[in-house]
Length: 129
Image (tube, rainbow, N blue to C red; front, top):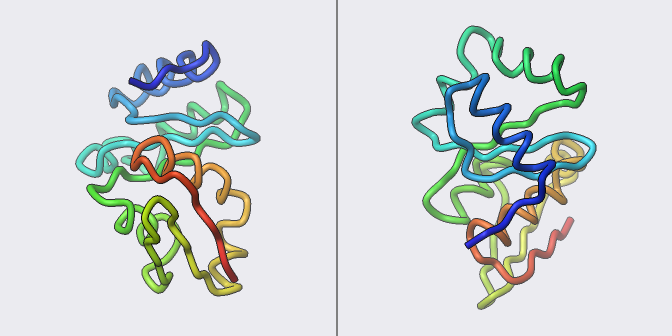
């Protein structure tokens, strides 16, 4: 069972209060990252992301929402790119990315890595360009 610090719990509670959606996970860095179930993603992003804009304004940090996927491969392809090449070496996940994909998600790579470790039990994530 995963444990959260007080700050993460606070942001998860705010997220749930504003969006009426329980996040699967949360990572607090320069931005705040949430993972929500795919079927609830539309509810979170409805009205041109009005609920996320309210959170941004209240918290003062940028909010990033990723969809929860059934497999780690599907998660990677959804949050980075469909074109990404994935090599699964036992407990290590190697992700081969184009420079364009790297630029697109560069600031999110650390959070993506943490979500892969926490949600999908990946021991090590290696990014290759």
